[in-house]
Length: 334
Image 1: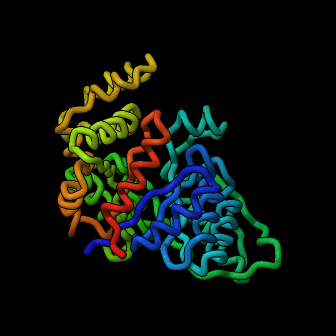
Image 2: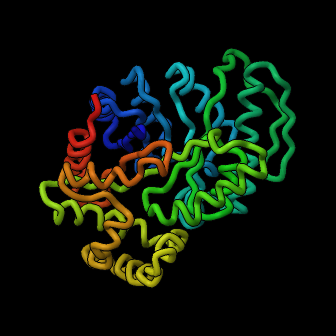
């Protein structure tokens, strides 16, 4: 049976309780985002509240922080958790880096490659290894401040959609975080071949990189109600030009222009109206509890682990919390 994790978030004063409920329900892993709150603080709350479950960031932003700060923070979370922490990194898109975080967006795949190198060199330096990194993007020639020791190998997972980042995942990372806005066809025809290229280039076996696929999962009393939540989430992701290739695989690339036009008008219902039931069945798992459990089985054998992503793009926060509750009840394994 494929391990199932769940993406969780929300107010920090409620996050620990939610994490404990997920662990008690038998989930294999918990994943926290970096959206309205920092991923590392959320991860610390979740780790402190749990004892068994893996906890990863899905994702924290790679470029707005120094790679040394990223490495130090990951080291601390690994120490806090006794080795349960997974460092999930992503590039985000150009506009978000430049306009929200005032960070240059330059050559993302090569820069991410070097960032991974620096993180691992810093972790080795905590164990006493010398560090003298002089690269294209980063220079680090001083060892960490004394007082904290090594914590073992910290797994690095990369969020990737397009070819170069997926290939880099195969070359350098420990896991592939498949974007929630992904179809099985896109995974099999685009992502897996790029991952295989990276594995071959690095001489590694496929078993050395976990495929952890996020899935938009919407559960409600009726299919129609569940589909509304899924459509909202697909519409939100579909406004991003970088993800157009996911639509293109299915011949639906033109919908991006309609989504972006509705988004520019502030017309959220208009965005949702762009998404068809066929798109819901392609990009999401939606339905009653029995229907959702049955549909999720299509990922068996195709991925190493599944990360359930409840629809959170709705303007109604109460609906988001209800979505978490429905997933907990529907997919509990304890």
